[in-house]
Length: 437
Figure 1: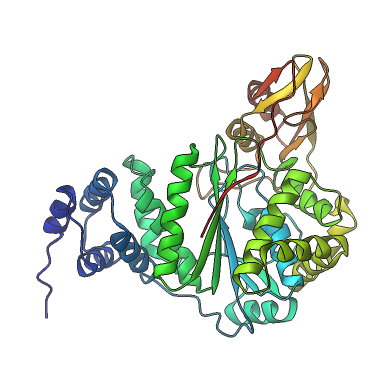
Figure 2 (figure 1 turned 90 degrees about the vertical axis):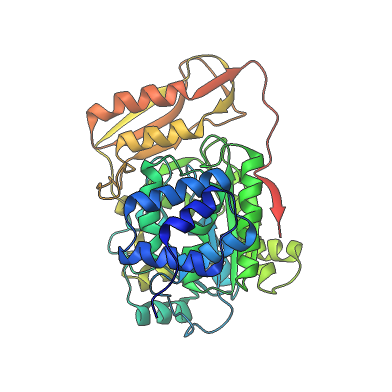
């Protein structure tokens, strides 16, 4: 029987501030995917949501409709509890490269589906593909077998998962409706729920290098996503974390994988390691591996005993990559050109604008502005001096790597403009701001 619902009525209802029913939301998303609903009507719907918002029930139903708009990944063949973490995106955010093998080395299964980078934020899939031979396109059986054997595997998202999200996001991007909390939450959680993990831990970034610039917005987004996850029957929690400065000392692809390896060798940046510990502990705790403090101790033990690193090596090799990169960084792609950025003052580095550093890495070739753009795996930035450290006039504060000599000058200009100096050291900011359960 033909539905009595009309697209016009649904748009008008939301425009006037009334909550939509499950049936109305499902009808609309189905029409978006089938093409029965025109782009101009979808755009009107998105603007109505942006202006009027959605309550928890509506946001959950929109999320589930997005989840159900395509194929759902069936990883039920994985033996044991499956956990995943998702970051809302940041600069130098390579936590998955450490967290995934670390929790896997402790017995938790991590069947991770990740994305590519766009704009100033990087993507886990791009980073891993800087390892020669690493295959992020494993078939379902290969993927499940790899997770069962190694404890973890990481692949890229396919176009068949949550296709409604791709359509909606493209329209949000051109209709000034990107920064709507219900639309952001349903986009992220629709894709996460399509993968079907038992435990979901969200790393919601806040600050200059994050999508959400203020702590208030970030906390609210985290609360919505956690609530949606719970209503969908998943163990869900979130950490709101600082992205007002780059995370760690490397921004790019190959350079970030090298930093992750150094971290698992016990030589990494302390702030980055502490965030990896917090996220790993949250995943293990949510999966029933003990109290939070004990789970954090287990993470550090895995790092100190080399178990996380060995699991990372096994994952690389199982997915066709050259595990020798762990011992020989010369196996990574190398840039033809390096430019050192010098301090413009004597004093302390008071602040680094994370977004500008991310933009500079993109200019050097490490990122893409359009989904179809190619990236330079060797391009990136090494942060020599970071927030809180003392520098002298003319001292090297960063190194920029690129295969495009002309790009280096613009990247250097952006990096220099991103640094603020002071006569005294700034107060240290915690990397984890708030935990939401």
